[in-house]
Each structure stands twice: as C-alpha cells, then as structure tokens.
Image (cartoon, rainbow, N blue to C red; front, side):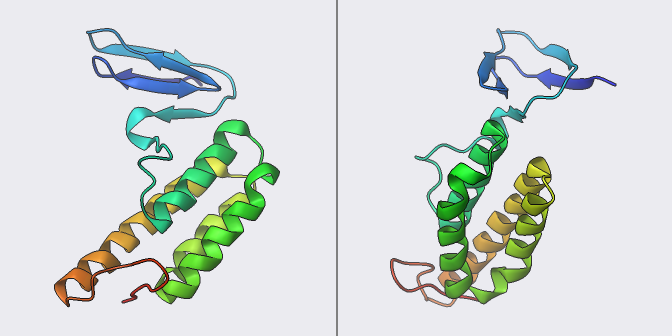
Length: 143
C-alpha cells in the first residue's frame, strides 16, 4: 500500500536524502517503498533545535534520516542524561523514545520525542508562571 502525502503550495518534504519542494499548487504524491520521509513541519534544523528536548528530537531525526543509530548514539545519550538530571519528570518520555529506538522504530521515536518537546514546553510555561525563568545554562527547573 502506498503512502499518500498531500503537499501545500511551496511545502517541502524529505524523502531519503532528497528534498522535494512543491510548486505553487497543492499536490498529492503516492510513495511506494521504504525510505525515511519527513514533512517540512516535522523537520528541525540545528538552528531551530533551541532547547534540550528539541536537540534530542534533532538527534533522533538524524538517526531516522540516515537510518543509522550508531553515529549519534553518544551525543544522544549525553543529551538524554542532561535533560533527565535537570527535569526528572521527563523520564517517562525519554523512556518511550529509548524504547522505540531500541526496537528500531525510529519514526515512532520521533513521535515520542515530539511528546517530550510538549512536556518541556509545559515545564517552561510553569517556570515562567512561577517566576523561575525556565531551563537555563547549568540549572534547570522541573514540575
């Protein structure tokens, strides 16, 4: 069964190691085969990975796109250890990401990492409301 992807005008899509940019009209693509696929809205760049959870997402994204866990394993676990130490409430989210990576489900790991980002946003919002200032260099707040 083909994967159906609908693109908005000008929207980009990564298929394997290629970037596909849609023209000025909506388009519907049917993709057969096995290749990593990411819509533009799901893509983070080093510049947009501006929080601990987003940096974890970026590492998982690169693992997914390269179909290679080993090249980023060390960096990934450093990021995970840092966020868990700073915010223990992230442990269940990190565990889910780890489980998906260990079972080879890197796309599902990306989805789990999105939940980690949402949880982190909640931590930041809570810290801002209570005047804690959020996660900062060296010292981070938790729920």
